[in-house]
Length: 374
Image 1 (cartoon, rainbow, N blue to C red):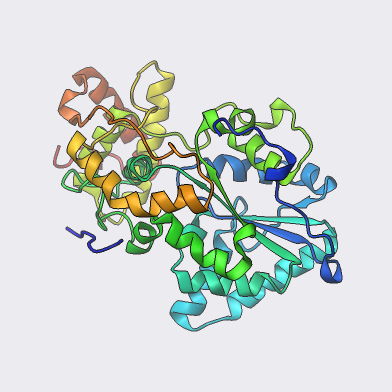
Image 2: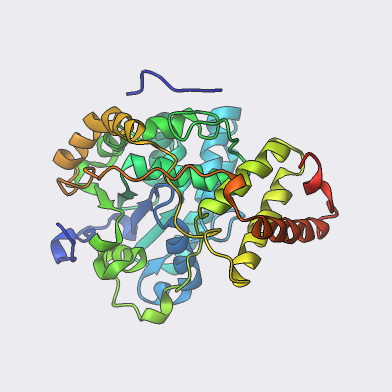
């Protein structure tokens, strides 16, 4: 099992002082560029869904959310192109992506461009410099925006997210492990160290950090908060999705996924099985079952929670001091541990969910495999 070692307002209503300022003298009519870094499990998918769904309306208002590469929702392919340069010494994909972005900037003539991918948070520091150096040739200014949550919450959310993809086994630790999370992402959870790289490249005043907590958000959701940050006009409520775009698993969903992962972890068909599992959970919730989708369970006992908080204390102190987070943002109360086994799921619910998932597998010509080893 992989482990890591030696790694080191306030409800905030927006005022004009907290918005990202447009450059007063854009050079060669280049736009300001807003680089949304994520992080993981901070409403990134919901924000990207809004930006893509409303791209025409936003463009009329002076905000370009470009389509770069093959991913229609986010700018994952741009992050991958940077990786291709560093890993394979092939810079052509990055050049192609930057040229594609350049043409859209010229065509739209908008004063603001927004680029978003949580995979920017997954980059090694050397890669982020390559990203910034490429983008700065197209923009009058670059502002990096990152939403953060306490690392304890983030580990809990990532554990849940990876469980949805059958990438977590019952034997895996809930935090501090490279079994389901790359060392780079773990290292970048030392937020201040990660953000210092952007401060060095684009200036501290162009690095904006927002606490990911609905009670602190402008108007209570990330879309309004982000658009308020950019200075967008007020948005009708109908523009915001009412249902979660990327819902978490409840305790039954996580327990079932761990049971299923023991049979399909690193299996050739694991991706299809995970998809069938998630579809089964949705069917189950619609059929009236509860605790399959919802609030992510906490698998950390009180001692582990304290250890995790202590681990990140130095960088968190710097986040409060240097990046203007609320003083008590990282001071969270110890949460009750909810480490429940699939054996605690009511048998009738377990059988019904097994049936739902098996029917989903049948659509992929994998019928019956879920029963093997049960």
